[in-house]
Amino acid sequence: MTGNPLCSIRTDANGRCEKPLIEGTAFHQGEYLLTFHVAAYFRARGVTLPDPPFFEEIGVRVGIARPDEQYHVPLLLSPWSYCVYRGG
Image 1 (spheres, rainbow, N blue to C red):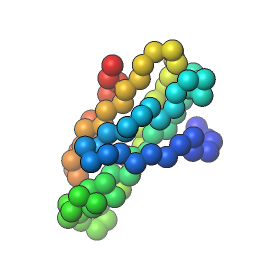
Image 2: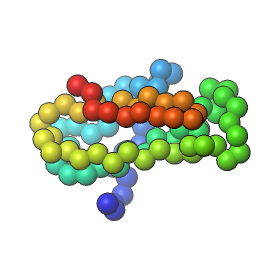
Image 3: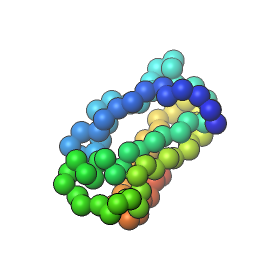
Image 4: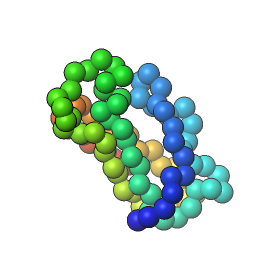
């Protein structure tokens, strides 16, 4: 997977995006890479991390088969683990 970033967004205080990352006609079938800057997220909240942190960034590759459907990609995380899934 190669390409240029389509967007960059900062989550709110609860770690959520205020709006969809891509919507409308810009949202196409294909593969996307979501990059979560988790060490920066934790540092901004005063969490002490080791140097280097266990996770600096988490990359999640997703395949979009039906862009007419809703895709919600929750990332549940701690400084030591994460879980990601397709929500509705």
